[in-house]
Image 1 (cartoon, protein in one colour):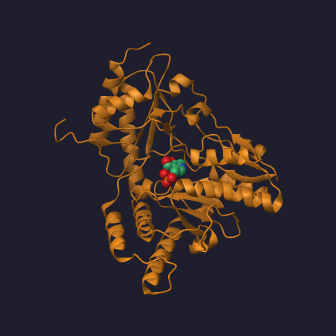
Image 2 (cartoon, helix red, strand yellow):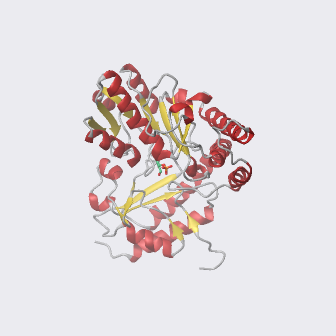
Image 3 (cartoon, rainbow, N blue to C red):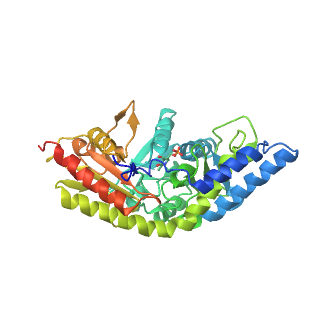
Length: 390
Ligand SMILES: Cc1ncc(COP(=O)(O)O)c(C=O)c1O
């Protein structure tokens, strides 16, 4: 690889590089704001000011009230808290013992629901159509006054499919069910306003938007009650025990604000990048199945599978070959002990197991260039051509 052909990172849905402006904020607070935000002396008060300013900035970005934002360790914790915390509170208070989640949720939601199943809840998975979209009517038919929580993500992390959140929040409201939407993939990519979405709970994560890993937030609409997951301190108004990580929280606030400022321009840019990449690949090789519907999906993600009737290849080989050529991409689905699990998202969309196992997710970011996607597309085509066809 020549110096001009630097490594190409097309895995922004997994994580993003830290924005230098965010890194500078974190560095300053690591050095200067070491106080415990619960302490009453000046060091604590200084940290508390930074904490509350950050809360206010994030609340403003999603149309929430400042007191409705609670800091967590990331999207996973926020999803766990929304789903498990709601369900436990609703069962304890109203005897509700059913949860409904979409079949294509991130494992942070799916496995939380599975855990609830292990402690006596009935769990329903709401199906999706072959393009990965939920039908709000089908969801409506699966919930009742017994439902303790309904959870449907704003956009899917593997395909980018954007879900009908406002319609689903109406369904939840009719039954007075707390409605959670995982917005980890949409903050900074789509407008995320809690009142327009109508969600009672949303999950945010900093590292998907050029912020630090290990910090996130949960929005809890005023009047929505959750049991806490963590016990041991009165931080975050008794909702989340543990000393707040003020430097990372300040970094998250900066990242959320920058993402909001860049959102529309980024949307336009990644649309061009995605369309360019798709055109190179679809013109270069046959038997490509597009998992990301061009009309209703985030343009930041392009998930493609190789049709099993034509190819006998697995994602691991594709990803490793791409990596050897200097391009980082993903299959989009979870990796356990180094091997890629069949995607529950693509299976829910009705793809066969072998096609599902030959999937590559390209995801674009604010530093991605047209030259990079062009090169990635050409390399992908030449790698696929090098595999024997069926
Ligand atoms: C849709 C979605 N939800 C939740 C998460 C988990 O977020 P975190 O990595 O901050 O725990 C991810 C991360 O991949 C995600 O894509």
